[in-house]
Every structure is written in C-alpha cells, then in structure tokens.
Image 1 (cartoon, rainbow, N blue to C red):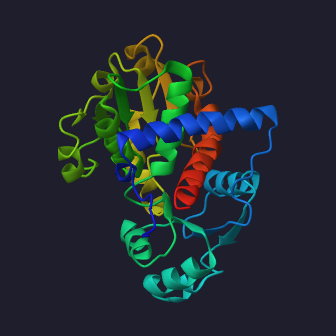
Image 2: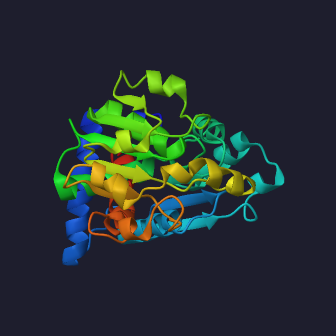
Image 3: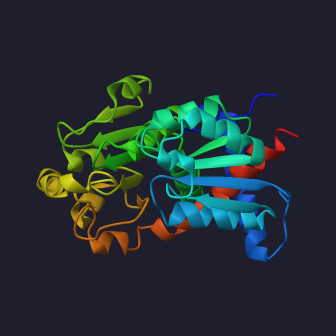
Length: 303
C-alpha cells in the first residue's frame, strides 16, 4: 500500500482533521493523567533538519518517545543531503530503514520529491510554502479555548508566508473567514488564495482586518533564510505590529496566537503576547499532542 504523507493541511479531509483534533485532545489527557500509551514501540522516526528549530525537534522527539518509539536527528552535517546526494536517493535509502520521516527544509519541492520516492509516510515539519503541523496545534488550541473555528473570523497580520498559506488552507477546510493584512508586495500565493473559494481575502489595513476577529495571528517579519532582509522589512511591516489597539478592534473574547519564536516590539507588543488574550504557550505545547496524534494515525492506519 502506498504511504500516506502529510505535506500540507490540504492533504487531509475535514473528517480526518476532526479525528486528529479529537485524538490530540485524548492523548493530551492521557499524558496529563500519567497514563502510559505506547502503540509505536519499535517504530523509528527520522528527523531531517535543513532549518533548525526548538519546538519542532523537541515536540517530535518527545512525542515519539512518549508513544514508545524512538527518533533519530539528522542535521545537514549528518546526512548525505548536505553533501549533494540526490533527494530521491536519500528517500529510497532512509525509507528502507525508518518507519516515518519528518523533514524541515526550505523548498517545498524537496518534500514532494522525497515523498514521491519514500516507502514510508513523510511529514512536513516546515517548508517555505507550508507549516501544516503548526496549524494542527493552532486549531487544537482554539478548540480547547473557544470550540470550533467554523463560521469564525480570523485575522492574519504580517507576511503572506508559509504560516499564512497554511491558514488559508485551514479556512477552506474548516469554513471560517480569513482576513489577511499584509503590505503590498508581500502577498500570499494568489493561486492558493483563489482555491479558498472566497474564504480568504487580502486587506491592507490591519485595523480593518482585525475588526470583530475571533482570532488574531501573526509571525516574525523575516523568516529563517531572510535575515539579510530584516532591516528593510522592519520599515515596511511597522504598521503591521499587533498592538493593544489592534486587539481592541477584535471581538471581546478574541484570542492571540504566534507560532514562535517571537520578537517583542517587532511583530507583536509584549503586552499582547504576554497578556490575557494570548494562548501562545498552550499553542506551543499542543505541537506535542497534535503531532502525536498525527504520528499514531499515519503509522497505525497502515497496519
């Protein structure tokens, strides 16, 4: 049977996403209660990192251990990918030795090429185009605090980046309104925008985008690999900082999310991210639980 991959949120159906969210909450409760749950004993996760990360590595490695399996960390120095081996060859070899592979990389095409030649499930731990694992955590967090996102209004404020793309796919899948406030020249992919069937739209004014929003989300202005653009981006994105004034435009019970790491005083003010509407720490923790549900589903569904 061909392996099932998770490269973008759109790889899931609504039914599958709803299942993963229920299972993530169940696994979180089991963990909180101290109940041992190890269905993945003997299974091995390979983690290929071309981009470094705190939360991605710890959540996947800890999650695999809690499920009874193990994880192997591979940096560019630890694999032949960093020495120019074709992606296809690495995929053919690793998928004969591992049960599942998570890749955190730059170009999304690397993930697609790897998955096309892999015998085992491949998970997108982040690419320049999508960050679907973070969306699983974000959706789980919103459900825990406010219930379903269906019919809600979400304001994305900042760069039209990989996180924005994954929110666009979430809007189409979960049927909520997404208002994207970004500077001209930093739009998300317009082809993907068209595929949201009108659920996502671009609004240049962040105050307008945040009006009556149930959730306000942002991300860093310069992602990894864009460090040389930092100064130029700061000038362009200054009006897009999430401030208390922007949060005041949102609904009274609106939540604030950020995938982290955050730069206080840049894309978000400290009083917002450290304030009562922020759920970023629950959001960060839920990377662990949502990815455990994903790993369990991808591996046990094949049996």
